[in-house]
Structures are given as structure tokens and as C-alpha cells.
Length: 285
Image (tube, rainbow, N blue to C red; front, side, top):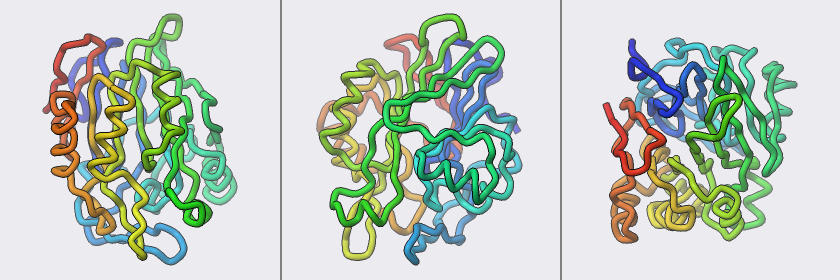
């Protein structure tokens, strides 16, 4: 199975949208995975405190079909972002970059020895041959109400800066994580004013009691407006029963704020290539 375009270059990022928030990334010889979720249709993800959600879709790739990984970027420890199949079948020697909360559990309970817990604005660099990626943990808030924050795991966004080991950043990728929009996210644009691609976790996830804990379409469009990325990839919107805001809601809101032309039309199972060249449309396959 061909996972990426045939030729990877230092000025292009190849991605494969596997499903939910799971994206396989390659920059030259460097390969990363975000939020590994490989449950099958009908299986249940555990969300903590007795809450379960049933998967409605099949992942586009099985965990056993993954290529060699140089690192995993995990936004938080929830069953639709790190599931039992990932825990059992991923290589336990691969570095996992995540929150301090998730890192402790992955190291002690699941024996992923090379896990790094990143506090907000802290970074970690991964290298392969002559290229590198600097992963910086960014603010995120899974719940708006203080009471809920104590019930949900801490979450981080991340900025992935790709480039040569001895050279400047060529491509910058923002991953929102399961956050809601709040003023603390505005600091991201001040520190990283030029993101080439924003991967936005949407879905309007609704918990019992009507509490929404991920961005719906309107919030996703508002965050894109605030951060002003060159391109936008929506993910995390139709895979589980707890999602209440479809992709169409985000597309309508993005159009309303003048961002429709920035949305990368890459659906689950498709590949896209993002180049460093401004004004060049991404290739989607």
C-alpha cells in the first residue's frame, strides 16, 4: 500500500488523513503520527468516568500497516485519540510527545519509555537524517466550565516546525487538539504568526448534560479567523456518536467568514501534499 506521494522533498509535507484526529505526516525521511486511533466501526472508545462512544467509521489504515515512525504527537489521553489497539500494537520505543499528565501514564502504566511530557510553550526536536521537526506544546482547553476541567484530561495543541537540521523552518503545521475557543489561544498567533496549515479538531463533542467540549463549526471558523493560517484541514467531525456538529457546519461557517478557499478538501482516507510555496494549492489524492 502506498501511503504517500512517491517523492518527498524538504519543501513539502505529505499527509494521509486516517480518520478522527489521526494523521500520518511525512517530511522528507521524517515520519510522524498524530493522535493514534485505530478502533473499528462498532467498537467503543472509553472517555473516562464511565463514558463510552461508539465508532461509526472505519480507519483508513490499520495500526499494523503503519510505516516506521519517528514520533507520535498526542494531544491528550482519551480513548478516541489513544485507544487500546494503539496501546497494544504501536512500537513502544517510538517517542511520544504529549501532555505531562498523559506522559506519566504512558511511561508508568503502558511502558512507552521514550515519552516526553511537554508543558505549554515547551518544545522537543525530532531528527531523521538531515531534517528535523520542532514540536512546541500550545495552550488548549477541553472544557469551558471549571467543574468539567477537573473531569477531563489536560489537552495541548501543538506547533510542528519542519526544516533542515542546519537551517530555517520551511513549513509550520498547527494541530489544535480538542480545545474550545478562548482568549488564551490568541497568544499562538503572536508567537507563530505564519502557520502553513491548521489541523482543527471539530465535531462539537457533546457530553451528557449538553456540555460541548470540542469546537463546533462556528468555533472552528472563529479559531481559523484568529490564527489566520494559510490552509485549513478539518478533522474529528464524524467518527463517533458524541459528535454533534458535522463537517458541513464548519464549511458553511468558514465560507461566511471568507475562509472557504483555504480549506483543504482532504477527507478520511485521502492524501494531500502541502508545499512551502505560498499561493500554490495543495495536491489532494
